[in-house]
Length: 109
Length: 119
Image 1 (cartoon, rainbow over the protein chains, first blue to last red):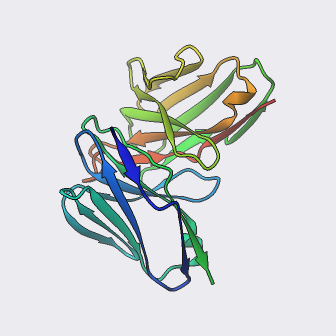
Image 2 (image 1 turned 45 degrees about the vertical axis):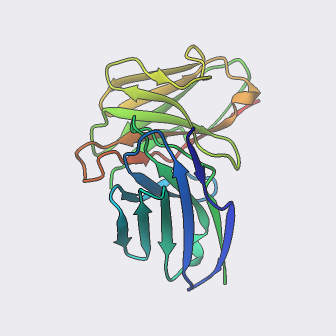
C-alpha cells in the first residue's frame, strides 16, 4: 500500500531550527513535495525534490533519499508565523500526490 | 508563483439545495485541476481530477452524480454539490497543475478553499 509517516506534532522555540521527518511508501515515485498549511487555510507550496540531496530555499531546506524512502524539511530561524501544519506529499507512478495528516508545528516565544 | 482563486470562500445553505464552487487559474492555463475535501484535523482527500474538455476522473467512494465537475476552459473548473446534506459540510479546495511553468512540472498550486456549511 501507500503510506506516509510524519510526527503528529512538534514544538520548537522562536529563532531555533527544527527538522520535520517524513518516511513514505508509494507505488512508483515521481518526486516529493512539501506544503505548508496554516489553520483554516489551503496548503501553499514549499518545495519539490525529485533527486537525492538537499534543496535550499531561504530559511527552508528539503532533503530526499529515494533509496530510504525518506525526506525531511528543515526550518531555520523560526518565526511565530511558521506555526502551521507541514505536509509531506510524495508523487506516485500516476503523478498523484499522496497526502498524510501532516505535522503540526507549534512555535513558542 | 501561480495564482489560483476560488469563489465563494464561504457558503451556508439549506439541506437539499445545490451549491456551485468555482476554481480559476489567474495567470496560467491549467490543463489539469484537482478537487479536494478536508475535514477538521484530517488529511486532504482527493475527490476528483479534472482535465479540460473531458470528463472528470473520480476517486473511489466519491459519488459522480452528487459532486458534478465541469472543466469547460483552461482557466475554470466548477464543482457543484447537488442536494447538499449536513454531512457534506467541509472545506473544499481546488488545485491546478502548471506544466511547463517551472522545473517542478507536477507542482499543484492551491486555491484558498471554500467552506461549506449545510444546515
